[in-house]
Picture 1 (tube, rainbow, N blue to C red):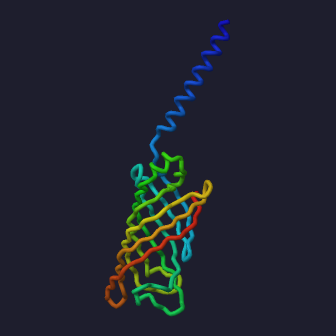
Picture 2: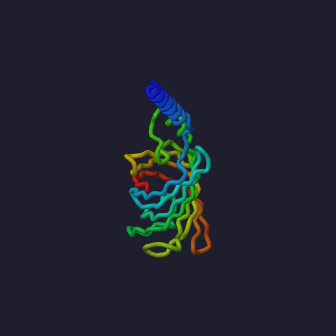
Picture 3: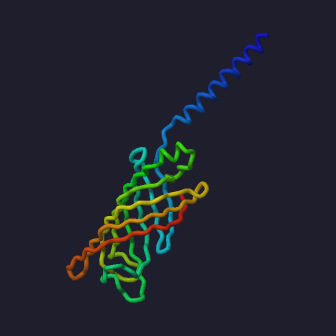
Length: 191
């Protein structure tokens, strides 16, 4: 009879442990990932990126890539006829995933920072490193609004739009300021 009581007690303790563990898992706060590293490709380029957690809803994204282009709206410095050029692009972008907690509370996927975000993209097109000849460098500051989503465990997509400011440094010591437009349509892989 004592062995039945022991087994019953062990089962009750085990059941209480499972119940407490499930409450603890549900009570954990939704948060951006501590660090994610990936590669993304878009219509006109390819990028390596890393996002590092700064707070539960803010991540700092750093990115390096190549962006093929021969079209710059409002910037004649980049017109080289039909010859495309491929500048190195360096980006730092603090992102606020403002609805990550709401998505988590609804039971939606938040893996790999899958959420809607607002950010401030600081981008440098390095004219000193081109795959098709030297071009002027520029710096862009673009407020962005976008969405990052997961496709399975490792694949992701991003869509976004922004408008901001571009400052171009030319070889003739002339500086040009124009509007900078950014449309993001990318698919990627998270390691």
